[in-house]
Length: 427
Image (cartoon, rainbow, N blue to C red; front, side):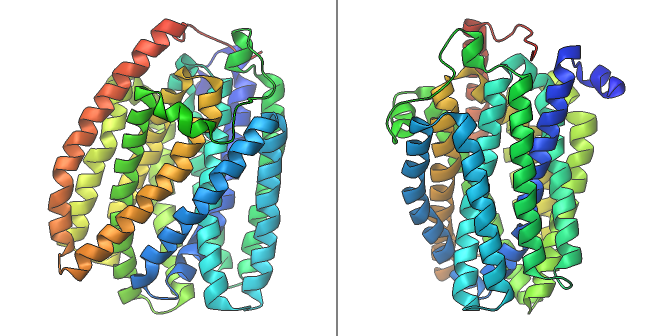
């Protein structure tokens, strides 16, 4: 830790919180990446041409889930609803594992499983980062979020590694049980992190207990803020590009592999490539790169990587190209863009961190997925090849880059107004 501390500029009082944030993120993403390959494999059981229906179903269920989350966030303090949500998801993992293992209505259960995993991963990751941006300042985020994100990346490496090993051996029950166990460990890390840090609200003398407000307060907060609208636009551009790439990936993989086990292993290999690249970037490059190119430069890396991925998959539609193109793009996203994006949230109110953030990272995210899924299906029906889609993405990437610069400027202004540029140590 002394070497890491020197490289990241970690203050003595921050080391325990840094380690707990690393472990917390590891457990959250390892749990998801254990079952993600299984989700993707089962999602292709009805054929790659049916994926847009699964994405639409995910969005519709999300519409029902967001008000429930808002209600819990309004009525209970984070110390209660965070463990509750994680544990409810853990129980659901065990139930799905039993159903899949016993081949109970495999196609229908597989579709429900796809939708549920697509929902729950957004909630657990959004909650994790809501906690982090509430417990660390903007200045700390610039220095520490890259290393904490590396904990999640290690989880994305261990998760698919176990999935690839267990997929044809112990089967889905072992995967879901391990995912549930990791979520319980994540709850323990969360509680330990609370004991070693102080929330941003408490630092400013504000009430740190219940958030209050209505269950749809997140939507209202977004409606009133230009800054939050900018974050909505960023998320829509991000998820639209990712979904179009995902659909093309599905068509290529469905044409190349005929059974669930081989598809699961392929998706696990892609996740391993992403994890290996991302972990290397995060441990060695994220913190110094963000210091060098700033938040705007780090955010703009995603539209650049997206154009490269579109071009590669359009020119060579092969599984190997899919693995490399998706690997590089997602590595850039996780290593540079995600830490920078989370810094954007350190300068908003506590209610916005838990409520508006959750709406954007769940409802807006899956709404973009659903719309992009139907766009992909429509373009395919019209006979438009993926090469044309790759050309269409270029002007949107330019708009995306301009938005990155604007968000970074707004974040800097808000940080200067709230004094976030100063050092803050967890106690």
